[in-house]
Image 1: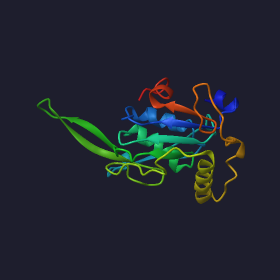
Image 2: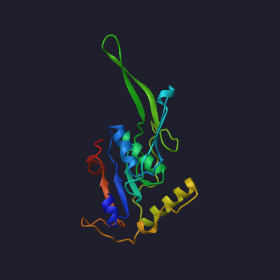
Image 3: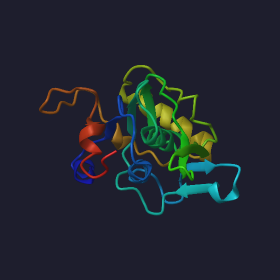
Length: 204
């Protein structure tokens, strides 16, 4: 992605549709690739203080180009963590359908007879303090946007959050009509299907 950005890719589309999640830590690490140092990835909350935790990005982002994240009603768990982390930190616009809403952390406790019981010990809360579980993630838009709409949305998000819009350079949104070899024409973007773009390094 860094090489593509350096070669002129202006923004990326991350496709998390039909991605039911998997390893939570993998999702967290994927989100960190796009977040600024100190940005909140996710909160975990529970009755026991030992389950209260704030997970943040520790390094600068791999790429700074904006993102469109595609989601649907089968986007769940760690995929929802990725989507909300990028959205709430003004790195991405969410497009598609409302997500499934799976945000519980459960532990298995063994009983004396060899059986076990599954107990929910904590849940995930987004950087904007929204409870994912049972609620899903609300969208920004239902259809892919043009470059101007993406730019406007992310500028407004960042201005509301930090009172500044200087982070987003206009060169990330070139004129329409740029085509790649596969014929995609949506400004200058690269679609990253989750099963390809993420599973190569983060198989969740």
